[in-house]
Image 1 (tube, rainbow over the protein chains, first blue to last red):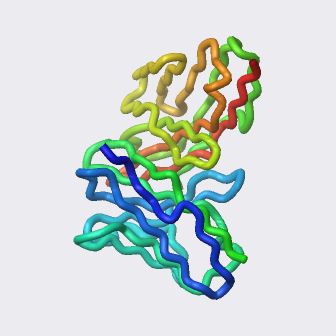
Image 2: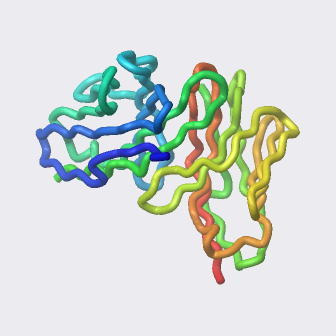
Length: 114
Length: 109
């Protein structure tokens, strides 16, 4: 059973470029979450999606950031016009949804903005 | 606002020296309390879910307990391979999960 798959593992972008982070949830999971982690800080919630729907984006910056989870294919976190402050580890998690099921995480994408 | 606070921030133990990690939470309508282990460069790995006060879960040298205000992760006779950052997280509502900042555990041989 494949776990949550994220790619790329490492991504380097220059200031002003776009970053696209991909996440394929565990088989049978239809709920996807994105978190950001800065060094020595905790995981900060960004956005919660179900297939074709954004359920909660309260943790996502209003500008430059967007997320989608299409009917087919992986979930995408998109950061436009990246700045140095966007450098962080971005983790995706999935769950089957409903009830009290825990989140299962991928190994993250480490974004470095130069 | 939901808050999850973990202590200590860092803990250094000799191999075999048992101890406990604390997670206190302020979450209205808690539906579950999760514990995770995170190794450097990796994503959090799920360990336990606790649903109600008084509940306990065990896995090898780890035992998690839950009260109405806090959770403890007890580590019995730790080994160097237990070195990691341990995260707790509180679940509220439709799956709103709030994480603490973690306890970085180092076990010295």
